[in-house]
Image 1 (cartoon, rainbow, N blue to C red):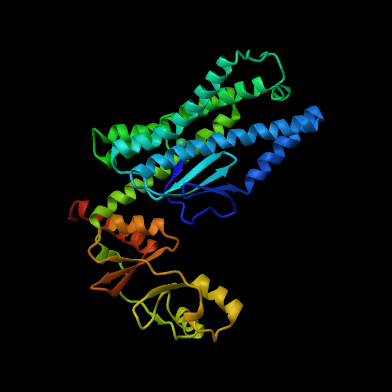
Image 2: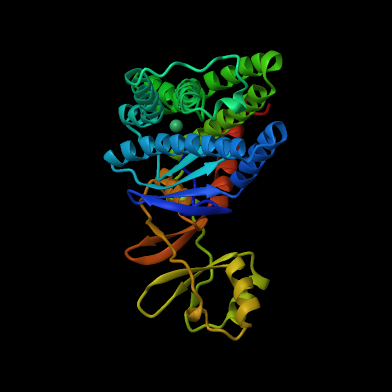
Length: 381
Ligand SMILES: [Zn+2]
């Protein structure tokens, strides 16, 4: 799976395990629940600590394969100049948090296919090793848990799970890799916007089919189908938003009436302003023109820690990222989605002339929609 809106370097509630090729590999806290659940299940049926260790070892090996799958995406994306901030392991799989998805359909296809190909490669390597060493497949009648004790069974299970991962990920539905391959394939023949909407619709039809299959065969499949349905809807919604931004200019979207603070101002002044206006984010300027951002949340944290007489310049504030007045709105939206703060400054000739908050963009789109609806109505008689 890939995700392009992961904002912080690593997800909240995650622990960094390692750094590979400049990418943080992290594990989410809920992963501990999965390991605990597996240990408990194995213990209940075997009462053997050796079996528990084997079960855990198997899950950890499996998740190492998931990390390799995500690295397949990340390293392919890097060849096209796209950085990946982190790979996070969740109990449901891995998520690679990329800066963006390549716009060129061929590149998108290669990045998407690279993950499942890694699983196929792992399966092939295991299969060759088993063949070269004449290892017989395990007796299928054996209990799944006791099976993992033998190295042959361990490897055979790992082989089949890697194949399953490759097949499952190639399902033509967002957010599966196959969904991105489908979109890229459609985008070579039609507009990117239409390709995304059509791929999302195919993904949702796929989810309906999986839901009915799951109804008869597996409740987990039903759960996954709901997840696919929602993800396809989200993808389609995000695309419609991007498309609507074609018609909006940066100048239209920005706020031009706002207060700016100076590094020498006290927190007291910021609190006064926030009490008397609805501004929630303040640009903070120093004498050299450097811009920082003070949010309401940072204000409250600072108030708790330092009291209201602290100078704003002494607080550890994030930089206010800026865009040019002439920059297309879609780029501005991408920028907001990639950074950790929800606001960008707008500059013209190196002067701050406006602020754009994600909410302003939404507001503007709602107005544009209502205006379009009005002009489409037949004139009143
Ligand atoms: Zn993938």
